[in-house]
Length: 425
Image (cartoon, rainbow, N blue to C red; front, side, top):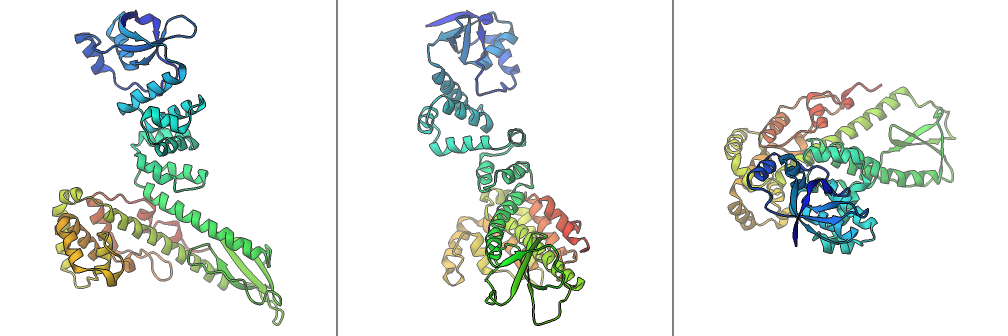
């Protein structure tokens, strides 16, 4: 039964998952003109004085601003857990909650004794979605709110889960909703893998080598950074030769003491050469990351967006086709079209069928493949010094015209201001 209740006796629910009621101006004007067209759902306060809103917080706030003294209400006797579930579901169905507010609401229900399965049944969200929302509560809440304000998407947070370390995840969270997010995410994932392998190698080294600080009189054996390409094998002569190690510049550096020769200092030239080698490998990694981001941008581009930029794409293709040093890769085009990556298995009829199905996107992929070769994607010389690249500048200029956003590190590699281009001390 609908009853008119004095506004002064109705209070907002203190545990309403939606904290921001949004702009009420339009609703206020509607209420002034036509009144409240849908009743509020309220429950008696436990104290026995007045009521709490379960459904209709915006209507209550707008009615107060419109000058109403009473509003139509349906009084319910639902228990506290049902109140929370009802408010959560009401806001979710209207897409009124941020992912942060959803996560808080789910956690509130969990704290009240609900299981994930029960929350899923009551709210209509899958159990996977419920768990993912609640996982957001592990993040730095201030940074999470800021990322929501930057327009972060749900997929951004799903991608963030690929980072295992919560501190590192919070660091990358600062980039969510910015052009640096994809770069920071990829670097963080790669760095976690590197550190995992680094620690595996370190544990092996500790079994036969002694940690030291002073390397005077020792011979350099090898250095390990933890890259996937780093191959570590225990030296065969550990029973005859004494080995030592130290950890510097994110490297495990292995030394040995040669009993058959005079002790020698680790010469400055050797140190410099090793640091130069480290710098070159890091530049190679950064260039590889940038190349992979550009590849993913094209691979995930939509046919609709390709149509929007068709004039730019065709113009660029004509420009590139006029060059004499084209090294277009048939295999690369097939890969970007999500066909088989095994060159021997690529069928021309499959390629033709895919091109006919997505002509605009195929045109973009062909244009990009002509432009961006993995062997030409460096802003550095063989010795690690900065080198401008007109070719790579053209790649970035084209991609940014159709929506690509360069990360800060990509910009630093492009203009030569990256810290790795500084002289090695």
